[in-house]
Image (cartoon, rainbow, N blue to C red; front, side, top):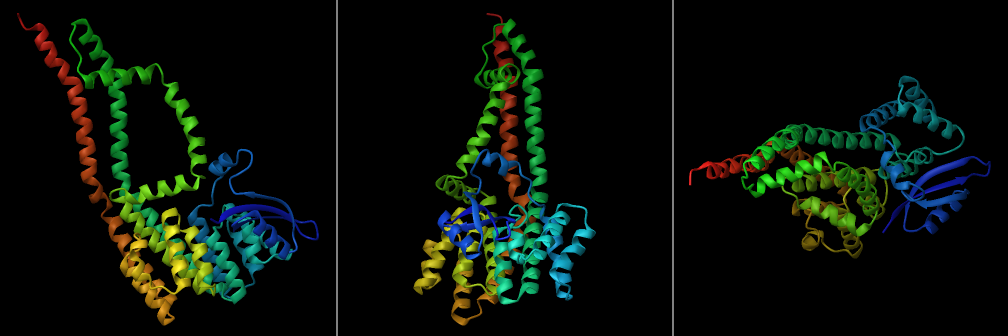
Length: 405
């Protein structure tokens, strides 16, 4: 399985070079640096090292809108015939942001003799692997202007989808947060009064009320225990996410969740089609593109299925006939990709697949609130029922206590 490696090296002039390379082992990174006439200083797996997990957790990534704006402006300037160094200088002068600083540093790298892709590789938290590799291929094929435009389109679609989902789940999340706050307010201020009153009269407390009282004790007396557990859980979770089997199991679980699972599946297939279209359209070999795009989709289960697609294309198998091995790829997507492979129009077919799933994602995102409502109603009903039983059941017991014998 390919892994991201961070390398530090020096060129023949002693200038330091930093970058990220996806490879099967450090040996491949060493060979890559040798081919570039670079002297390696350090090669390590991304996220490893002293406090590597915490650094990667807290290190702020470049906001997607800034990256889109940068790519759009660079594409427009470059299409106008302005050299890359001058284009980067213009962008750096027009903005007061992180991307302006990065653009200025990239201009310096280009003036020092680096290629554009090498300059991009110095900023792994700003540019993804698919972005970097697409630029590499575009430089070799002389299609940088076209690739920049397609990368911009793909990034914008990804951003629009995220915003649609955020808008759709804002109301349900707000309701759930308010219910949780109301629950803790009840547990902290109301339940202790009821418990004191019921205790004076010797009423037997039912199970729901006992749970609320014990929750109150935990919140008011042992509050530091859940806080300590959170601080322990975060680094453990970060470490677990670097374990391949755990990450794959988690990604599989995500795809099986109601409502969100099918939506995420469509998003991943749309992203796969867009990215492979960009990469393949830039002149890259299809098999190399499948390797890069599979890792960039964002889900280990989909990545493994992309690996199966690659193997079957190498063996000359019909993708539609292996549908059972690709449960998260629809028959429509596989059929259109197969037709593209057979007719030599794969780039066009990938665009059609992407457009179809874009419409599916858009339709589902707009209906997301309506799809979540039944689950939200069940959740609110369960909370209200539990609180009602906790408050009123002891009252019925009190009636038995005060009833004349």
